[in-house]
Image (tube, rainbow, N blue to C red; front, side):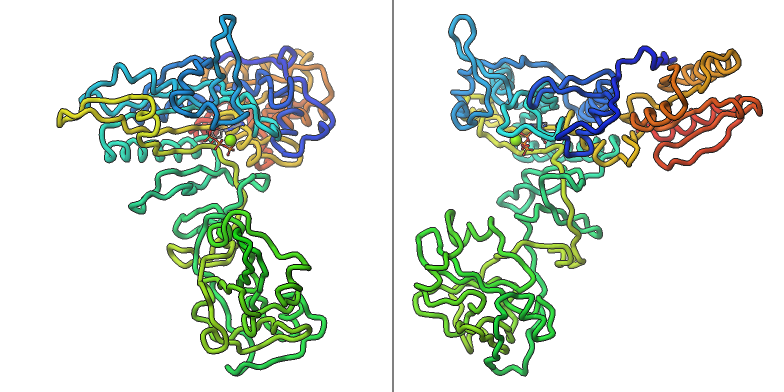
Length: 573
Ligand code: ATP
Ligand code: MG
């Protein structure tokens, strides 16, 4: 039996207009639907509707954590800064860390994450391998003084996180805890109706992953990803690596100089030869981190990846200025590997290794070469992985074409190892009688960010479209004439019936025009609406609307409770 909420009493101040400077759908809609209010930059109050959804997400997280054998506890938000000195993070963490003195002059921090606290908590008590593994978690407000808090709940300064920490005696045991958390996180996303990809953030020495980020797919996401629909591979496009497919350039295999007046772009050259951009070679003149000149060559339709370039050319490498081009005898738009002036290092993308017929600049204004062949016509100093992987490139695992998407990091699992236990002296007595540092893992879910991610994935031009499992209420009952006795009686009958079925109901009993109520309920996005109109009531029916599909159907008054209960129960996860 649940208790219905009446909208005449509900504190959900909806807005008619889009709030200024809310760029993201989730930010805009949560404000408009009267679910959150900004208190200061990156600080939000969760109003009653949002708080119900937050609690549902928390409960899904809790259920999955408990099922995976983790134990919930609660640690203080305020953390003795001395612990952060022990771990060495007090300065390393930077200005995101909120620090302050208590009245006695002792320094504290507001926990942005709790590795130090939890390590200090267990170090005197987890003393034997027999007590391990242990996995402890809490769901709590975190503080990070983000440089640019923005996008509403997406990047706040105070936000809700579930953070878990596992302690193991062996690497195998850590791996088991880590794998359980990965499964739990996949389940959490599924149960919250968040479509997410597990992206390998870090690979270990033996090839397995040691950190995975769960990325909710959304155009507004900060991360750009490539993924394979076929085998499930996913990676940050900065980190992804694959063998880009290249086509040979035009020509008959002999080195031929061709006049290309004014054609200083890949687009113009490809058009001139009537070839795809992929069949041309893009040459970039750089100054490496040591100040030496380099020419880097990539397939014409791919970009030099900044991250990878940093690995090869050093942090601080850059494009040549016009003066440097001139000083090195290079001509913008006509740079290439053949006849490269002395003293310039030539680095080419690995994808070009087997290509024998390049269309490329001739190092002479208004000329290109076709049929240029590495080792015959020029010498490559180094082959390296240089390009940003894009949609259409082959999956490095199965070879099928990759897709591209943007993502929001909603959670992360991480094998910490002994970083904190060694620094903070958290050791245990192993089976062999030796004292060893605890082997740790940490696992975070952004609870408030997950709420934003759900809205980002589930909305339309009318408002939020809540999935049942995280909706503030599952059904809105909307009597259009709440003051009329007949309407009020049927309304009460339906509401009582739904409550008896355990369905969460909100009743729009407000004395407002139908158009206003429809718009408001669509904005707030309850999954099902039961509309009690005059005409229907005369015929003994009400209208049932599915918010997601917009489909409406007339249902007999005495059947609607069973019908709605069935739909809702099937969609709960
Ligand atoms: P980001 O790269 O987005 O700053 P992070 O790597 O700093 O995230 P973690 O330290 O791994 O994040 O924290 C665990 C989870 O907490 C993240 O996956 C994310 O969902 C959430 N989170 C982190 N920072 C914020 C924030 N400023 N506001 C809301 N949620 C956050
Ligand atoms: Mg961060």
